[in-house]
Each structure stands twice: as C-alpha cells, then as structure tokens.
Amino acid sequence: MASVKDLLMDSLMGLGNADLELFQWHLEKDHECISVSEMENANRLKTVNKMVTCFGPEEAVKIMVGILRKMNQNDLAEQLENKHKQAQTEGNTNTSVPVGADTDQTSSK
Image (cartoon, rainbow, N blue to C red; front, side, top):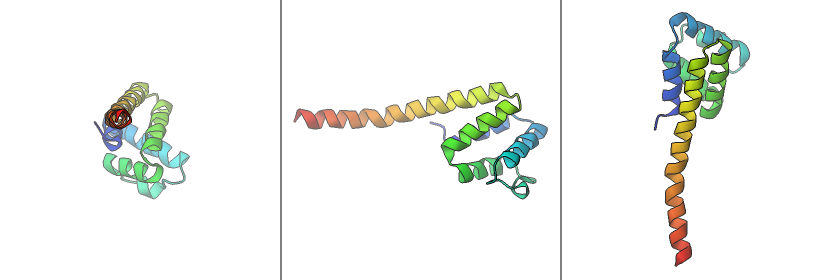
C-alpha cells in the first residue's frame, strides 16, 4: 500500500516545473501555514513534506486535490483521489478482517 506521501509525490511528479511553481503559489496564497519563503526554491519532496507536516496526511490529500482542480489538472486530481480511496479501502480491509476473525473466535468460545 502506497503511503500518502508517495501518492502526493506521484501527483507532483505529473506537473512540469512551471506548474509546480503555480501549485506552490496556490498553496502559500491559500494556507497561512505555508509561507512564501518556505516554498521559495522548494522541490517536490520539500513541498510534500511541508504539506503533511502542516496539514496531516488526510487534509494534505484534500488540499492537493483542490489545488490541482483550480489549476485544471483534473486528471491528476482524479487519479490522486482514486488511489487514495483505494489505499484507504485496502488498509481498512487489512485491519478489519483479523479483528473480525478474533471477535468471532472469542464469541464462539
């Protein structure tokens, strides 16, 4: 299962350098947690790390999807949403099956 940081990084890798700068501009303009100086000369990795640190993984995904849509990068936004939902579903399935199995074994004793 891909981590949120991996998913965010994959999305930013789909942007050219000019679009990355535009993404960072939206990020610093719309969110007080991100300053202009932090985004100045920031690469994709630093951008992802700052987003996750500032907003947490789930909110970082929502924010990135929103900014990508503002930039008319709808395919990237949709891919990120779908991969994130898939990762959540896989994570929930992986954790809930053993718990359910343990509960069933306990209640049948």
